[in-house]
Image 1: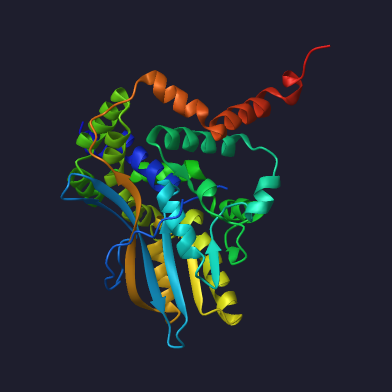
Image 2: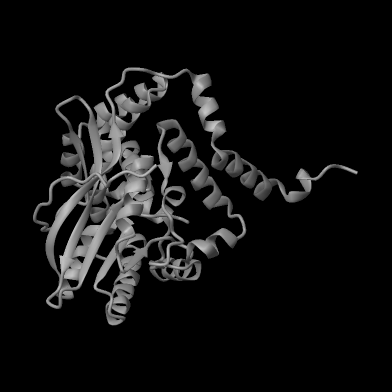
Length: 341
């Protein structure tokens, strides 16, 4: 059976697409951007090989403008990236009248006050381990969400649960939909063109060698295809993860335009942007150009680290330790952490 389009491959692509480009659960550098180019249904994420042997995973900033001169920039993001990437994004986002940001569950301030959730803690723990292994940073840690121009534009937990109930959707049903897609001839062809079998071999080799650059070089091309996969996953009826949340974004855009804001950023995962661009064009906005920002700067080092060094790096990460403790408390109960009488 060809691994290029079997269930494990589709599962991996679905996981990468949803976790890193579609949903965010809750030293100064100049923004590194590529040359501006016309935007017309442009990709919001791409992988490029450079002449010097390095590679980059890049996300786009797509500008759209209406007849009154109001500009809406679709600022794409991957949720785990280089520290310099988030520093550059902080500088970029500071220049907007308002930044509409994603965060399922509510504004950052409310999220920090919420009680621990086993499923969310597990997801965050996994993200923390991965970013520590790859020497990357998590978006919620790298972006200053408390700036005065940041406005939450996403589903609350109540919205999320209600919308999923209305659509009878969950992460499990989305993965089931992804499994059904493996019989799509077009998807089979695309995944074969991605050389998925070779990619999985490289990822396994990178993990065994504890080589962060090799791991990133193997994973980045898969992420660059995430936007197309998410679009296919949406199908004709859409999903809560993309369609319903994008409707919330559009209502927020209209509210900010009505308030007189002329320069608006929509700061969301790259998987949201094709649908958002279509919705904005329906409202009279036209593409006005785009630039690229480097999310992952991938070296060509053959140097590996020892398993002990890798474990030390992971355990140095406070978010990993806090995640483990939080999960233990959730499942074992606070009483088990108290000294016995």
